[in-house]
Length: 171
Image (cartoon, rainbow, N blue to C red; front, side, top):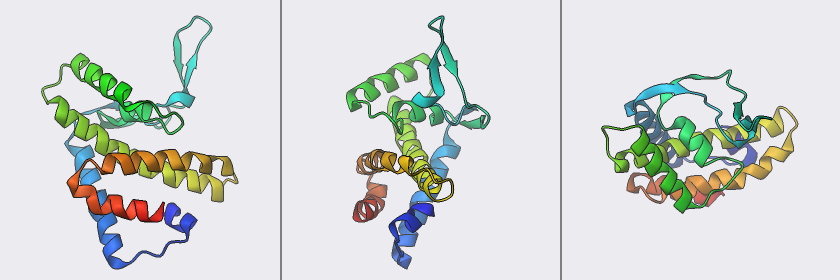
């Protein structure tokens, strides 16, 4: 993992197990969600206001079938903008109502939260890789925001308590 290289961390066996357990939970979370078309990079930097005030979307070459919460978490827990939690909660409720889901808002929120952890772990690694491989150190400035999302959200779930402690230990 690039982030481990970035911090020059050597993990103990129990720490590896904690990470693998978290990864398994995140994988199960993604697979249990309804699968839909996802952009996979749907965030503020890939949205553009066009001359006619309509919305333009760029960088969609990685679009695939995926978890229903993936793009929503990319937008609402954007790596480049920190929205107030009250806004996120209201937008989640609104989206949940609009899709006329046959699952509860609580279930949808859990899916959203766990997908956010997966997405931000991925983004943190990408930001490190962009620094090392591509010589773009400016992306390192976005890591604290992504780690903050991971820490704050993982606090909400007892099954992620050890993972939360581990992330806080290294951040």
